[in-house]
Image (cartoon, rainbow, N blue to C red; front, side):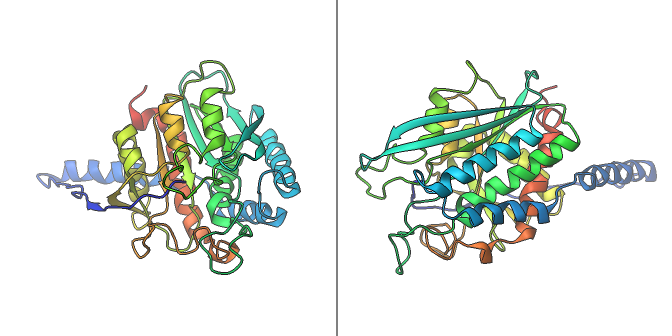
Amino acid sequence: MKLKLFLFILLTPFLFSCNNSNNEENNEDENEDSLVNSTFNSVEFNSDSAYSYVQKQVDFGPRVPNTSSHKNCGNWLTSMLQKWCDTVYVQNFEITNYKKQLLNGKNIIGSINPNAKRRLLLCAHWDTRPQADQDSINPNKPSDGANDGGSGVGVLLEIARQLNIKKPETGIDIIFFDLEDGGSNNENEVEGTWCLGSQHWARNTHIPDYRALNGILLDMVGATNATFAHEGMSVKFDNNFLGIVWQAAASMGFGNYFINFTKDGITDDHVYVSVLAKVPTIDIIEYDPRTQTGFGKYWHTHKDNMSIIDKNTLLAVGKTVLYVSYNFLKLTNYN
């Protein structure tokens, strides 16, 4: 994704008031809290399973376009969605990047409850940056891409598996976008060189006039002790839905991951989904205040391997997104 300077604004924390006027109201509140906790706990997300899906992608090798690793992983991802989704679409396309290289891209889409009109889109990119250009060692070779690419896909594969076991009321579309991570770092040519797969899909959706009410993008969601701030473009596209997702995470005990800070926006797949495809989409993406980039220290380096992937982080993100998927219409008042 395109990198920008991140500015951080501490948001006003949620304020809660308690009314202790009588025991009856207190009992009602306790019963309601118990019901909410029971609902959260009923959401099954297996972090071991998600971790294994990240590992499987890494085992293929860097998923760099026009390589056998990329081709083989794409075929595997397609087969996995075919196991768990009602309908799977494979969108093969050719596109020229900023280096004038012709790339073979593949967007992979799995639809659950395809006839449901009210839909939620979940997405991540599955390709690996062609070079670890932020590393001082072997910067021209690609990294494993365990977190940047692999983690979001791993979480969504486990979500697809769970949604197949217990069907949601909402229609769910899971999209693995290709060619996200091959853009230019040159400030004079950076715009439009990233997120080529989501740009193509947004202009050529897998079904004509595709519509979803909201979308969630997962990008770099597996690192140890990761934190996810309010990304600026997500705030612009649908701040209300972002608040719903972050509140759900906090209520499930994941507030240490989903923090109430706002950072500058970045160009990521959600921008093209929101602007071109008209699906307001938020980005759950790691924010690290200790780095100049705002991303983890592993970002676009060879440190982006399985050693940084943490099952607790995968659980926090996966369980939150799965809960929102099951309760989407109720949480958003779309009923």
